[in-house]
Image 1 (spheres, rainbow, N blue to C red):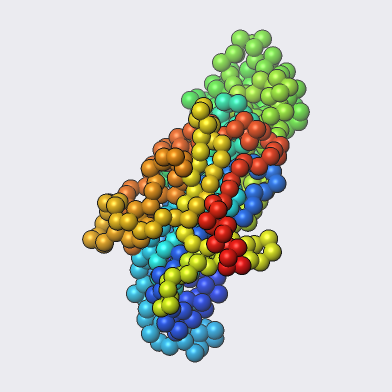
Image 2: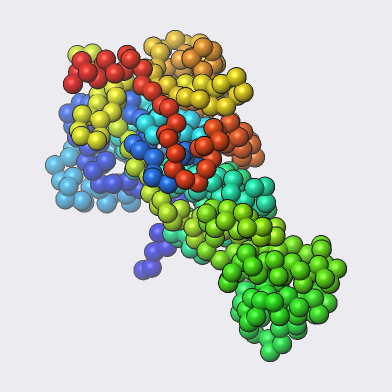
Length: 473
């Protein structure tokens, strides 16, 4: 029987690596499953071609956490798996009734972040906090990659609209939807993906395929027929045969058109010549759309040479973050409550060390409001001062009283998201996330907005955390 492999909310439990499940079973067998533990997720180092990142993907991560469960057929599969042959029956029964009940703090989507800073913190039963590692890493990594690429591309376009054209080149249909969302967060105007536009309520844009032009024996007829059917959304593709003649044919066809699209050749020179043809025909109203393996560097160079391009469609480079297609995202245990007490957990491996204990990040601004440095500190002890705003009647959880209102230390980046698995407050809308991203990017030092690598943004670790690591190391 064929399998679509599309995920559904009933089968999220096994969307994880096998070793997460073997560890979960081990914690259960040895009486550790309910020990309270804290894990943190962060990026070890920035890619060489990124001066900053834009955090994205949190909404999908929350959806996963709130729907995490194991379907009966998944439990059956695990019972029959040779790795779990010696695991007692009560572990499988526990999985069957699992409900996520951890506390989660996170950096809001659209926030500019840097290496070493916790993007997300999970505190709760050790077994639960362990199981979710794989899904959290892949979900936050994918959209953060695209949002970070999109932010650079939007900056390079200098106010001209940028549309996501990457669905055909994304790593699967689901990836195309997520790329459309992430790119919109970072400032893209919309997407070519119709379902993403419908689901997210964002603008969609379509032009013409070369096959439409090729299907007619006469280019003018192809333009005219298209304009008749789509008079209010007509962008004519003029480079199927000869670009300049295509521009003349588009005008001569009398077709309704809002724009012409260039998809190949020397886009800088061709856009100037096409603009002249349009202007000579008194069609100053017709815009020029450019596409064809564009990225932020090509857009920057085109505009630097005076290319009169009004809108950019960016596909492969954006949806795959082609130049930096991965992030070194990790999810590590940083604190654990045991019968002997609460202990910070850390690694000292070369190039992979991390600091123990839950942490907060504070961001400083200069007199002009520009970000000037971040400081990673140990999170304050729990004080139950934040009122519960989600469902249920749970008592305040640890760390909810941690300072997050600003002050001398700066603006705190991590905010409470889930308490005992329930939302503390409603998630922001996509438009709110988009506005946050625009505001965040506007406060970056100008050198970080450049496309070339620059001196890294200052992120320091508190003396307390450094001393803790040295003492335990």
